[in-house]
Image 1: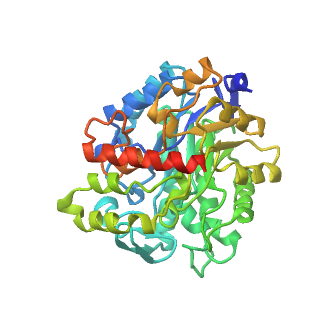
Image 2 (image 1 turned 120 degrees about the vertical axis):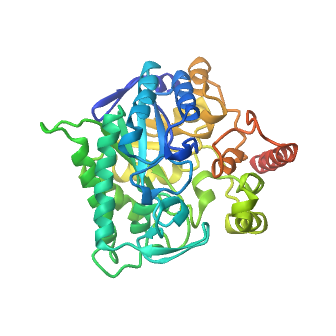
Length: 421
């Protein structure tokens, strides 16, 4: 099955040169909400490293959807630079995808330009900020923004769009009973809670379809297998979401899990990178949040032990429920043998994040060595740094301090002990 990894695969209207996809792991490489040289260099390096398709991450469909200062925001003026990026990716033989979404309540007025939206009103401890319950006009505006973002992605030369419907962002906030307490047609039953997702996806599919009915671009969506905590979406409900997305016309679904505002380490596994997050937060503007992370980060975000293929058990339930549908596996693919197991279990494609951050040549090395394993130790320094600057592995980070290096080594030793148990 290792050889099978390096065979082509047809995803909707496009064909990937192999079964590997760089997952939509947020890079933090878009200062001013625009593409940068750092983003260009990283994705071209991953493409040169043998990936079948690389995904540019966390592109907000409109300004209200921005969750970070260094996050991409889809608008006409950035299309030429995105086209330069997709041309460079294509020149390396890879396909280019972009993840489109809206963060909902996971923002702050100074970033998104308004009181953050949510399926329901509330308070976001992470920003911290109050959250505004979306009215019907705002819902309609965001729905249309999804279609507009797909049109811009096509103009920019992307081969695929991945709609983010998981991890506790806006579509997920409508889906989950934890964040959706509405009493109108967008709340209550699961069918009602899927209404916002349904409207967004209809706009997406319409924008992705040419006048003659052919698909102009591949369309995938990332969904949760479960939210990862009591009171959230469980597997059975998430399978119904998958069935609805299939009915709406997606070409494939990425199976993930977790809720950033409630169970963040369920998404990524390992320790919450307290030291790295706090270190890169500026004292002048975020001193209260910096202190809060240092004092309560591990309480709010407890460790969830990393293990290879950590979403496999739940992902297989989706395969059993929809055996003839192409699901994309993500979560703990760190070796050629693990990748082979994914294909053996019936998943035609798989995504990787930290493995191709630690080494952009990871895919080429798997092709050369059937026993190759990633050197990533899953200490999550990269995730901690991305919240304030950009995602970078501690092994190559240009500004890592001796104190942070000691913290990284300590977490690595702890991870090694947990893996041996």
